[in-house]
Length: 503
Image (cartoon, rainbow, N blue to C red; front, side, top):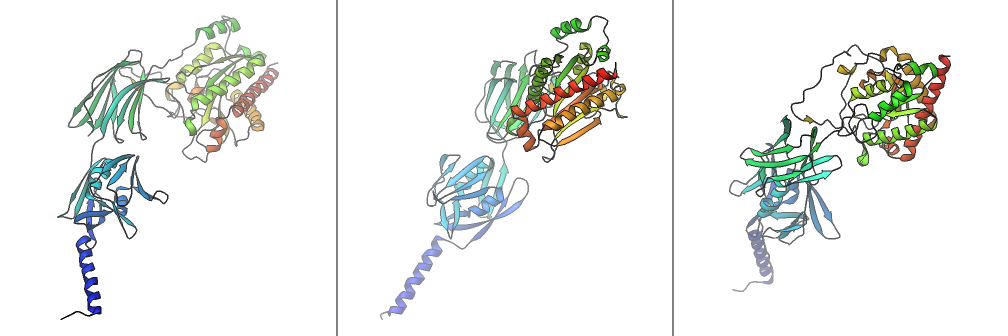
């Protein structure tokens, strides 16, 4: 019996359907359990007898973003710091530019990318630093976060000190402390070595670095030179690395040239207030922060300590041209304790004290310049206790301590409020007419750096380093010169007025 034309067409269609069913099964769903306890779901399908998973679902589950490049006809994933790219019908997937064979081709079906099991276990697992297993019988995927791998350890000499650089495959938690002088210990829980690592010989302030691996993680002992005084540690993202910087901060006391100049200027029996009878002759300029204390950071690596020193240098030049004797609490990128700054000014017999800073706030909208003078609060107490020095001090970069606390050792500033306010108003008046940024005016505050000064003292904030517009101004040499000229003119104006009041 022969088949008619219509019956033959039906038979061909049925055969095609059977073949398709053998090649691609209907969509299925796998559960994916993440390391943080979350559960998500990924659509799966059998293609050529093997499990494949929809890329869009995988990306959503691990928090990756997708990007399609129509020019190259490639799909890419951004997974943290890693980049994964793939092309349809290719069994090679690039991880950070390195090709990896996933044994079966990535395929595209109905505009969606589908990836084989080895994509999960060999590529995605590395990108998210996790152990990924696929259980076809249970229709389940598990993601278990791995500890970081220590790829290498090295030592670098930088202008700020000696840096221990630990290269990692991913960001990691760490703990660090110094319980005794000459040694810093840090620990990376769950981390492991990629390869065995030898003890590093010393460079600069670091004598040696010794690393050990245990089931709990990686321990490191950093031996440092006796001259090391402080350290700081930061975990960086791109590329992942832990950097521990060791510094030998130069704590300036009263520089001998300054003392010699003070003796020549004032004589043995001079009082710090004597020069006020004839106006202002000696000015102490205090560039805020310095050394390991960078102050606040702005955009494009702008540091407060660099801005304040640049402005202070210009203020000093302007005042010296006008015939003032000018000293600075620091002329280099060195650390000067807050209490010592007032001490230098007092011993130099300065007539006025000008501390230069940048404003900062958690809101980037805050902007403008401000001039402040000291006003005590009920919480300010006299306490001459000092910190212990058994271990190295952990750096507090960019962190300001609130209140005066144990720094009100001079006990003079509360008696000089009127003079300090007059100085602040004179400087602010000059800045207001010369600077383009917002004028925040004059105000009193409990400022530690001013508390011990035995002469009229103010703190000038030239602009907010955390504000984009102000930061751009602070980075500009022309603006810093304008700030310096305005401060110098304000000091001169105050000197003229004080001379008139004392005649």
